[in-house]
Length: 187
Image (cartoon, rainbow, N blue to C red; front, side, top):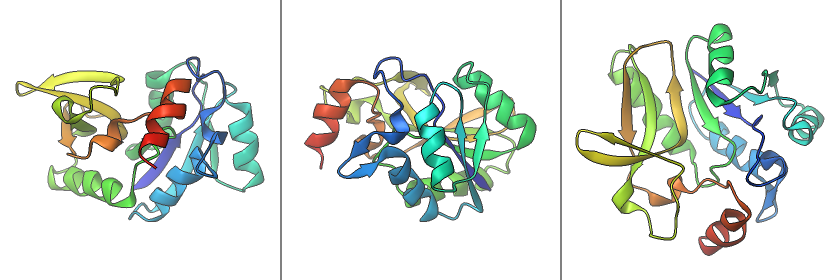
């Protein structure tokens, strides 16, 4: 299975291309790329758009494989990518605590479920520290879960969560607060 890192968003809450923001001396895109390279992913692409010109320019300079998406929104870009790739691991470029083992775990779960589903990586809401504001909360089997930006994307109608108990996965860098306080608190 291939991995596609989503790095073409508008970053409207942060005000700058997330992929090229340095954290601990590394650009966010490079942090996620390292994790993908540690995984069993067969290939790696970076999905960018006109919304993130600095990220695209950086990726081209580094000779990463880039796919240009329309940049019309998260779901629209996923549909665009699905036309070209019938299944893939999608990873947001703003989840700096992702590791290769997380990518492998969700991929293994997908294959165990006979590949007729899409999978959403999630963390139980009750595992998050109170100062972490989750981006997207949903309920599954009477449990509140936080989706965090690691998914197996397919055209299947059925979607299942794969639950990780690591609360750090739910930290997405979406705002200046996230960048300044949340991430630095866990370095």
